[in-house]
Figure (cartoon, rainbow, N blue to C red):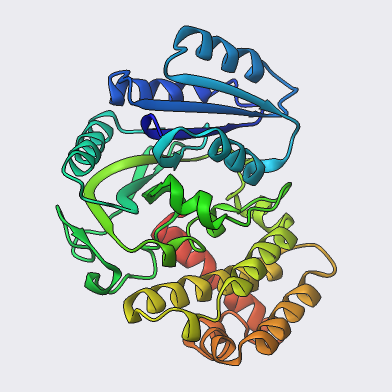
Length: 344
């Protein structure tokens, strides 16, 4: 690997906003020669995404590479970036998001220091920020007080995560070999694969480093965005597909020996089941509730202990109340949480 880090930017009809993403990385890295940016044009056809990707690559040939492929969805674009990556580390930045310049500069300095002094790190973790462009408000997801700072540490040294503090893709920068050697099961033409990316590789990571900076800026505001409520309800089948892949990745209570990591992953999976339960009720698809019931049955058959934790826990019960009144209570609770946390 002849680069320190690869930033993969999946792009699908992203011409309107991809420049800001690319410019933020160039500025934060000071166009350093050990940084690589791979723009993956995932079959864009409605705008100038392909031409812009080529123009950026021509302007910065030592830093930026443009990869063009037939449309395969976000997961296929991430895997294409990983396949071409020459960086020791690998981070995904969606084309409508961006990175804070000061925070990126600090992260790169820490990475270089760790590599120079042979401090082996599998996973770098940083904070991320929900940028709500409609009302110009921010919601910072920080791991201050949960993860040790300024040191290499293991999962057994971390504290308890709050329900709103999951290690989403935006917080993670993996050593590339962690992803390449074990693979990441990202299905094509499927949304929400970032949950798999932020879940399946975790047990392979033995040494971690947390830098308490607000690096990733997660754009919230477009009506067609995948995390928009109506969009998520319309794609509930894909949410269930992703959750099933996560379910089948591990028997968590048997496969994950470190208690702290197991607890975190169990809670993450419970949240995924909560999301499926809520958005099945919000969906207008006639078979949404049938598919949800099938998912619960499959979980029960696959791992009864995971089923008990997800279904009989407080969140599982509150989001699966019987009757029409129960559905209304579940949806009202979700909308209250959405207003408080502002996660979409």
